[in-house]
Amino acid sequence: MSGWIPVLDALYADSWNPELRRFRSRFAYRGVSCDAGGLSTSLSRLVTDSANATRIELGLLRSFRKYAQRDAAAPDTIWHWLALAQHAGLPTRLLDWTYSPLVALHFATEDLASFDTDGVVWCVDFAEVNARLPSRLRSLLDAEQSETLTIDMLQEFKSLDAFDRLGREPFVVFVEPPTLHERLAAQHALFSLMPGSTACLDRWLADHPEVYRTITVPAAAKWEIRDKLDQANINERVLRGGLDGLSRWLTRYYLPPHRSGHPPGRT
Image (cartoon, rainbow, N blue to C red):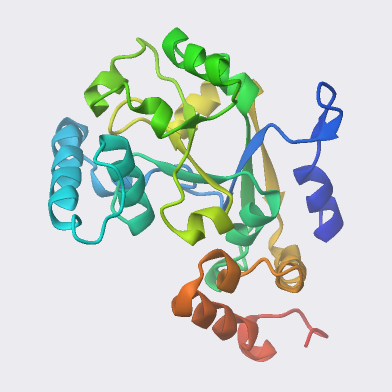
């Protein structure tokens, strides 16, 4: 797999849904610029002492809720605050994913400092993950005829502790956030969520290899992929929005070849 087409073919493999007779993938995608630490949450990176993780998580959310009231336009539930905090950059137990293979590919090729390192796109099958959910969560999905939960569907669990007590074994659920910002819609975003402040998704996936696959984004192909994503309008200006997204895209787009690390012959 050494170029644009092989990577695309791998990303869109198994996207045919025979029940719908449409190409509707059942995968969630997450792209990372290198294969080290790509599934650790921002909270787990902040808190190395698991004994204090719950206390720190609750303190972060409590303080965020206190000081963000003026700028928040969301219902007053723990789940809306958690989604808003994740969007705003607060360390949380949530992990960012997307429905879009191309958006995931963007994040695997966004960091120029990692262009000498292979990237990876994680692909997780909703149906396989949902089959391993506690019965209460499966019932919620069945009632809505959905493969992902929404923040509203989680509201019967009034606290993180109530959610954490749903199952004896670790589980993973994918949650669609409310459109708190246009960026979430542009990125076709969803979150993964596990019980426990320090739950480890890569460990859970290692125990369930049948629910996922990984696709390598070779370092040698990153510039080709990056340039073609830009031409397809998959870039920071669109996915991040605002002046900061525009500035990040322009800075990378106009970087001279001798500084960008383009292969010989590229301009």
